[in-house]
Length: 292
Length: 339
Image 1 (spheres, helix red, strand yellow):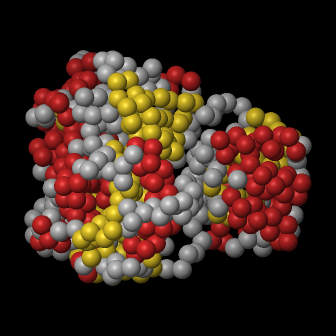
Image 2: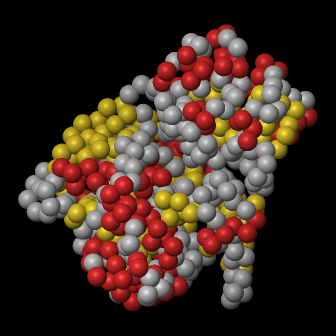
């Protein structure tokens, strides 16, 4: 690469779908995130690792994380900084609430226009929706080529990247020009762990809202005096969107109905080897589409 | 105009099963709506495919036939699909939820600003009233899919934007030749109007399709056996259940060390970490070294003679019983209920 490569990783804080309670959905059928434990979407961590490996090979390259979500999503930006990211952006605001994949992609693409990265890397899909749509939709909104299911960047060339991607029963090596969007598969390298020294350094990183909430705290004073501790926070107005394309209004798909199919009990349900127990279990697994 | 479109995916020149399954479903939807069913094939060497597509009900077969479309690349496919949809204005477009469909269908939806619902398990025509405005809609496509790690089933509609688009995984819909075959009239897509040089920017340098090998990492369902399976011969039961469920076979370290299974199947700290939607632990006690590699599974079923086995602490369903008794019953009742 002839220039200092600017990489942005799209990451999502997702509800841990293993621990879903009754209040997980709002009456409108959107996700009630406040009621669920939140984690770094697993494949976005693979994406972060792939980005960090590019940075390791390319002098002057930077890796920033961009996430859209509520204030607490700043946690995954900090987590990414502990693992090696240079910094991050939080896109947050009521205007984005209720977004489907298309409205999400639109909002992210507005923020990405402002950041203007050379390479955008995202996890293939998020575990709360499993749609795998946002990466390609962002690429289309920005008019960029896309490489999906990426596993490894084999070569960083002057104006392009050579990438190995996973297919159903095989692999493909493609060369794609920069700027571009890549989505990363779970089969790619796992993310490096948090680094103790980076935790000490970046644990003070805050968004403007977090700093404003506790202006006298040590963290806020640290963050105010050091640029690298500022997580950039943008609202809708900062990314110059068409309001019609944001949030619920900008979402062509509407949730008509939600049915809870599995009641997640905290205790294991105890079954015996009796025919009726096994039969009932199989019927349940088929009805919930866990099997078949 | 306003017909039902199905994207036809090709695998080494043959029509993918999922595309025929979608034609079967598309025929049903088109009949309900009183419109035509149209197949869209983009690839190379497509002549003759229309016969089979007609057998599954396609009234029209759109083709873009050129070496630039083979192997699949995102941008040329997207350009052709978007161009054709803008011209023909279908009301519904269906794609297989394959690596190809999941790659370019979102891109098409983004370009057309139309909704796309991924991995639908049911597609039904029905009416809809907007809960806020009270505005009524007739003949919408209900796109029904599990979400949230399979904890909910959501019905999605797309009231105001066209086309209504959905992807469906292979094997979810039934594949059946149409009672009355379609006309299968071939129409060539004027693709040169849609594809630009910029769409050819991504180059394929190498491509290798491998034999299917052990892939427990990517499996949606895993049946794993432990030392409690007793012997290598008994471990065959684990394979049998996995085969029936379309699952991969995993093993605990103790089972691998005892020679019941090959090392590539080992799950745990010193093996592979898996996160399937369903994990069935057969005769696995649940030592931390094993559970570290599978406790992120969406659902865990354990089969163990010991009701106090540690695995039961993380299991959603704990079956107390002998694997030699329980597994054959699972096979029997799965077969009985799935058809």
